[in-house]
Length: 100
Image (cartoon, rainbow, N blue to C red):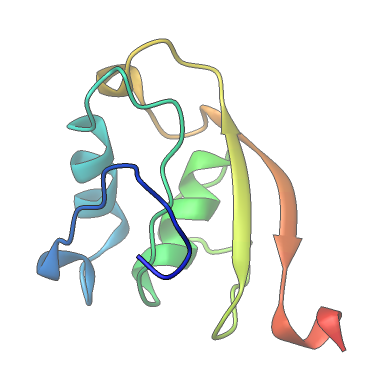
């Protein structure tokens, strides 16, 4: 509210400590009208999701995300249900350390 954002915000408590596979399943349920999603969660699930989307395997983390890191992943999909492992491209990775 303080930022003046008028879009849809949804809270899912199950994101907190879930694994990459469950996060992928959750993203596949995003309504197709949504062009962007900001997913805030915790490791190891978030690192696994970013790694899996960007061409690796969720269990073989190569996108390291220390606390407070933001990963921008571009997806070439027209429907969220079409989301799959390896379907994204890492465009930007910003860690708190890089902002100093």
